[in-house]
Length: 396
Ligand SMILES: [Zn+2]
Ligand SMILES: [Zn+2]
Image (cartoon, rainbow, N blue to C red; front, side):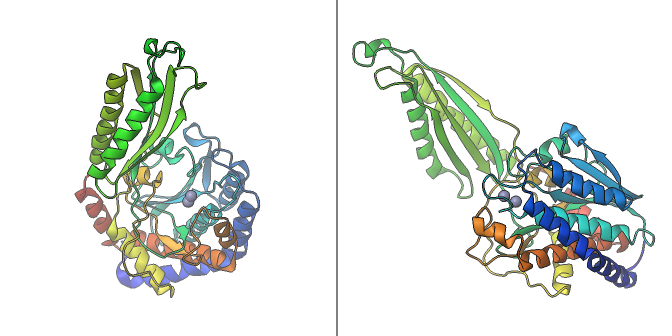
C-alpha cells in the first residue's frame, strides 16, 4: 500500500487522463442525449459504452443478469475492487431530462482514468452498465445476480440543481389490491349485489386517515385503476395500485402491514373478497456511507467546486441505487448543472444535460470519482474507514 504522500501524483494523473479523454467523453454524452432510449431498450447506449470499454482493454460481459442492455466491464486485478455505475436510460417524452447521458459518461470517464494508474497500484476497476433506473429498477436483478459480490465500493454522480454529497432515498414497495364482489342491477336489485367499488373507496379513505399517524418522511400514495363498468351495475370488481415508501426497511414492513389492514377492513365491511399482492421487487432505502462521501467531497472541492450548505434537501424519492447501497458501500453525490428552479424530470433539465454546465459537470464528476478511487486504491487508511462505517450500520 502506498502512503498519503504518493496519492497526489496519482490524482494528477487521473485528472490529466480525463482531460485527454474529454473529446470522446463529450461526444459520447452528446450521442446518448441525441439518441434517448427508454428503460430496458438502451441498446445503442450500451453498445457505445461497451465498444469504448472494449477498445480500451476492459473485459466486457453483455446481457448480465438476463438483461440485454446490462453489462459489466473489468480491468486490473487484486484488491480493492471499485465499481462505477453507468446509467443511460431516458424518460418517455422528455428524453434525457434526468441527465443519465451524463451519469453513464462520467462513470465511463472515471473508469478509463483509473485504468491508467493500475500500473502503479494494485486493484480492479469494474464498470456496471445499469439499465432501467427510471422504470423497473434494473439494478435490483443485478444485485440479486451477485454482480456486486466482492466489490469494495461503488459510485456514480447524479446531475442535479444542487451539489450535495449525501441524498437519502426511500425504500418502496408497490402493492396491487383487488376486490371481488357481486354484480347486480344498481336500481332494480342493489340488495343482491356486493359492491367492490365501495370496498376500494373505503380502503382508500382508511389509508388517507392512516397517513396522519405515520412518520413525516414516509409516503403512501395510490390510484384506483378499476372502479366498475357502468353506473347501473353494482361493480363486482375494483382495483387500486399503491406505493408505500419509508426510510428504513423495518418501518416499510410495518407500514405495509397497516395498509393491508385498511384493505382487509374494507373487504370485511363490504363483504368483498380481497387479494393483495406486491407488484415487482422492493426498492431498498439508500444506506449512506459518510466516510466515502467525505473522500469524494474533498476531491470535488480540490477541483474548485463548492458543496451546497444549508438545510438538507428533504425532497426524497426512491432509486434502485438503494438496493446496491445495501450490499456494497455506495455513494451517489448530486452535482449541480441547472438553476435551482430547474429540477430533474423537467423539459428544461434535458437542455441542462447537454449544456456547457452539464458537460463541465460530467468531466468534474469523472475526475472526482477517479480521484476518490485513487484514495481507496492507494491510501492505506481510506478503504478500512469506509468498510468499518458500512459494517457498523447493519442493513435495516
Ligand atoms: Zn429520474
Ligand atoms: Zn436519474
